[in-house]
Image 1 (tube, rainbow, N blue to C red):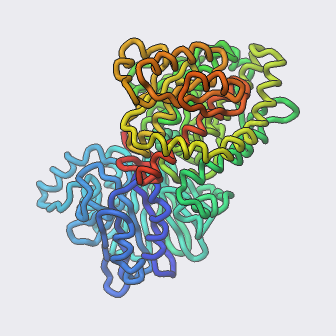
Image 2 (tube, rainbow, N blue to C red):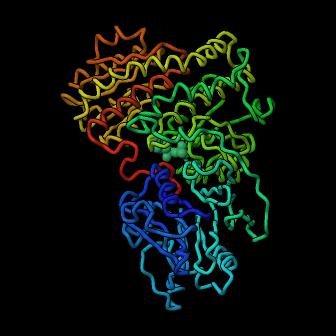
Image 3 (tube, rainbow, N blue to C red):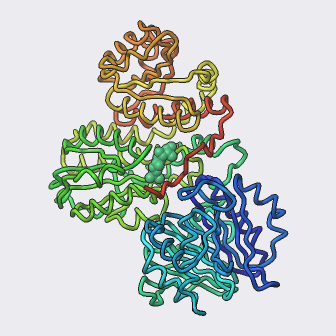
Length: 611
Ligand code: AGP
């Protein structure tokens, strides 16, 4: 999704903007641009280029050819208007004296554009963002802040904006509504960014802007305003993760680095929450009485986070005997959900900014539910709008394909299920203790899987030429298959489907023919025999079966499958946490062998802030 960076200080702005934008590349984009106040000429200098950031950087000699110490930069992910130089941001007003970078969508742009065109304003791009730049100029009479305020009263939709005005060369105006924007406080300089990774090299002191807020950034400080344009004080947060966490650190791809980081991420996520054999959840405001009275739990999320919810449903229902429904966030708000004050809505999101998930959260809140979110990015919108947050502590995740965030979300779901079950008395002491023991062993068991990654690489070399893959499984194995299938298709572009094994015979099995690759997931012990039957079923139709099961079942499975990947045995609750790792590695190696752009797959963005 689009990325914004801004800088006001004493150093040359363009190199800082380009470096900041390079840290936001992971979000997904198709063009880039910068606008810098050219102090010698009293004008705004704007440079834009379709394609990779490197194209722009080469054009500007890494920024060295653009002078000036105040500027804004942008990586664009096209929504209104195809990727092109002219549609790239910054968008400028007709006089060229207002420049705007924007993340989000101006929903009423067509109406505003028509109004401006009636006034004789010419448009050069197809973007909704140009409307903002032109409208600011339309209202501008010497007071840029006032003009921005008037525009904000007219535009609808989601937006994070960075605005430069040639007449106010010492400042940037920032605006936020439903799209993330962070302010950074440096020494004799200020920053603006879509996320912390863009500015962490320069400052760790940040302010997370809230919806409706406006900020004026100057070299000597930042003034924030509320939606009524009254000055406000904001609390400065200190970012405590290391810069290395957002760098590749010798790995070829962020995705691989993040796969390998999972054991450490799990230790950070799990260990502080288990003390003396008990689960402790920090900042957890749900009383025991509330937990007992929960009538229904909804889990709402998108993509991989939704897949965590699928596993979470099986585990929560099994341990707590409370009914759990999992909903795609993009469907939730349009399905007239049955939600009351006794409904707990668990929202899962790595970025904490996914627009569909945020909209679902707001709808659930409006209907009176209590919102508990499981989020990775500290201070993100979803975290701030929830009644309670359990952070996953996975550290920054840069690759578009989520891995360590998925694993830590799952761990938090497990901790939550155990915590609820303890309160409700629905789990036997022995099982509770066994699950806790296994949770503590999870990182080490995952390390043994990662140590055998060459085996997975070998299987990838056998199968990377397939054009269609089926993942089959029952119960949590089915939920795990959904994630394995998504990982494979998003980074390797191979068509793949995940099916509940028992459902195959109702239609899909007609697609199985000689040589079709079926990844059969059979880690769930209670249904192992049935899963074996499904392997036999597809094999007898000619499928090539790569099976995944536990060490204790390796031999048995080896008798029917063509190849077997075995994960360490563990508590049932945790099987998907281990089982997903070979699937992540498989997708990674297949994509590598197919020469795909692993960290930035086509058409995808890390954080999806449009509906
Ligand atoms: C998974 O690899 C994807 N990048 C995607 O499905 C992602 O999980 C989804 O967009 C939800 O994102 P979120 O967790 O940041 O809300």
